Image (tube, rainbow, N blue to C red; front, side):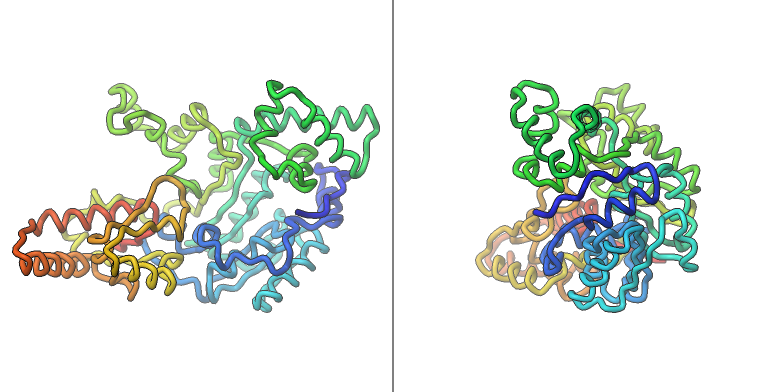
Length: 449
């Protein structure tokens, strides 16, 4: 996959982090590697997604300012550029060598106006501007004080901006913290240096018995990845790695005067989905759940089933968003005035052509072939529902018009063949399906101002 970084630098100082990534910019993907065909990555890096979840409104990316904080070699900067057409991309990082690769990468893909600056996150205010979207991926947990870094980013977040950041999850990563200590001890006692460290990790882990805890918990699951030096470096030999919990995250948000929006993979963090029958919860638990804050619900989730490597979240300035409401709670007048959009990563010519071909054969249509994030459920259009939604590929539609036109068409077609349908049931079917897709932000339903 890549040339291994030399694990000699210490992660307990700015100079140490800079030296580490100057030796081997990360991630080390070839310049020609692109996100253009990765709808999942584009979906999660598109400002439309978190902005809708925050405000239940659709926003255009053209002219917006996007910061990639700790951009490294620019691979995520490229995703941000490809996901947000017309946005201005700015990246910062400590490593000059990484920034040189980032500049080359973005220019190679046609984003020649992207800017990159050698600057630590704690001094991001020196840029002298604010940003509509800030991405800080796989960085905060390496800082001496992640809360200070988060507060610095909050200081350059536009009033209605969205900040994405993440922390290593202490519960999920606990075995790897043990492995890091074990190999730090082995390397110190044996005076093992340079690339010999990677061989030591690989040889020891492969030779351990299959029932040994570390091998079971954090080696075999990695599949072929554990053979790559870069993967070993960023997991088994990473110095200064730290893990956090949900309460610690929320404490940092309060310290930075930021408000939690949601997790990037929010369906996977839904507490009630851990139960055999989510609609039949134990009565006492159900009462507690209804009154619990998002912090408490997420903390319970991590205690019951914490299996995410990252606590990966969106946040924003407090009090500026429009509280999210599922469509089931909208009033009849609100639904009547609503307008429906397709998420940009679904509104493509290829998907529309494939959908039309599927409809021509009266087949169901599997949307997850085109977009799988956020993970949390299958998304299949049966041929009848798909016909009702097809106008969305031409542009946003008033919800009422979308439903009424489809109901009228189905009734006319059915009556012509001597059949009968219930128009109200049809209305409910299409509205329920839009509501289901809206839960995943596949459909973006705007209320009137």
